Structures are given as C-alpha cells and as structure tokens.
Image 1 (cartoon, one colour):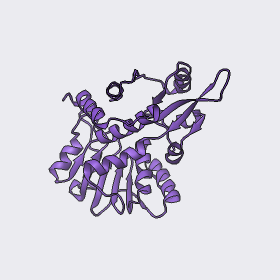
Image 2: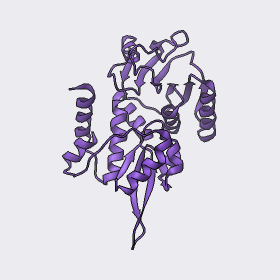
Image 3: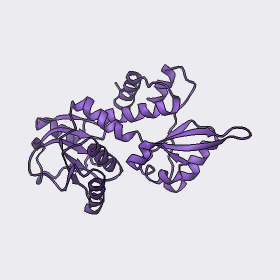
Image 4: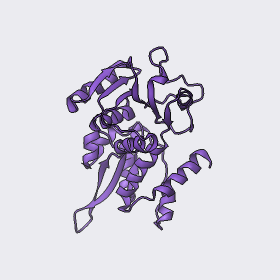
Length: 265
C-alpha cells in the first residue's frame, strides 16, 4: 500500500520489509538511521521494546505505551546534524476508525468483549476505554496478563467498567485480538460453552488474511455484522505515511493495493 501511495503522489520512495530478530532491534534502528531512512514501521514483537530505544516519543506513543512507527528527524544545525528517532503509535486511532467505518458502530456507551490482552489487545482495550465504552470484558489465555491490563484500565479510565471473563448477557461488539484464525485448523478464539456468537451484535477480527476467518464465517451465520482487520491495517498505514511524508495519504489507492496484494482482486 505504501509503494502504491508513493507512486500515486510521484514520490521517489520505496517501502521494504525486513525480518529482524528481537535481539537485533536496536542495531536495525541504528542502521536505518545512518543509512538515511525516512522512517520505519514495527510489528510484533518490537512495539514495546522500541519505547526505550527512541530519542523522543510522540504523545501517541506515550499515551498508548507502544511504538509501531518511527520517523527519523534531523536535529540541530551546523556541522553534522544529529538524526533522532521519534516514536509514534498509529494503531489505536486505526482501531476506532475501522470499527466506525466497517461496522457502523458507536463506541461510546458500548459493551465490548475483547479476546486477547497481548500487544494488540492491550492497545485496543486502552483505546476503547478512551472512547468511553461502558463495559469491557477481557478474556486472555493467561489470566495474569488480562489482570495486568484490567488494573491499568481501572487506573487510567475509572469510568469504564472492566470485567475479567465472558459476559452472561449480550454485547455490542466482540473483538478478536488473538492470532487464532491465522492458520487453517486453528481453534476458535471464542469458548462456545461460555459465550454464543449470537450474543454479539457485531464481530471484528483483527486478522485480515484469510479474508474470512472461521470466526467471521460463524459470526455471519449467527446473524452478526462482521468485518476483518483490513480497515485497521489501512488506517494505521495511512497515518504512518502522513507522518513520514507530510502529505495526505491517498486512501483509495492504498485500499486497492491492499486488496489486490492480500486477496488478489
């Protein structure tokens, strides 16, 4: 999507993917800095460790406690200008934008069941609470991590009621922030004995490949409005594009490129 956007705006830029071992993250960021990169995107498991490797943090990275976008900026004048790494977070706003666009959902006052309390789940939980959802039910494979996120939410957003475990009544939204559904044969992220999909008005799966996970297929069969994570991917990428280039992202171009690359149409 970035290369399509660069081409559409006539920018002589290129976006590349690199696989970096967690132990080499600091060296990779330093290498990109000295080679004159405009910036970087980071995905799991780099978003939290990167916080301590930045020269400065944008308010978004401070607020959501994770870095998924880096911009390299020249600082100082005369001689050899220092280039500093500034960390941003474009994930949180992308979640809210995708939910509103793809599911036509009003988050304020909603009751939400969130599956997963890892990096993506934690960011989603914080953003949902900031959007003033009324109640948030947290389910995670390891309960200790869910408790950690719950205590953070209670401290930062005391008006949002946080409950560990499945709700007994209906919810407005179910979000899958786990990796279950990426591989064929994965178990459902939902424990059907504790929660029936028909109890959810809408279902959002952060996974975008495959386009329809077993969860989304089951959700639609149960009568839920459902969407995958492509919209979230688009919006976090568009914001990163604007951070690097200072130009308005061509959303339609980026969206078409994503669909063509991921789904082949």
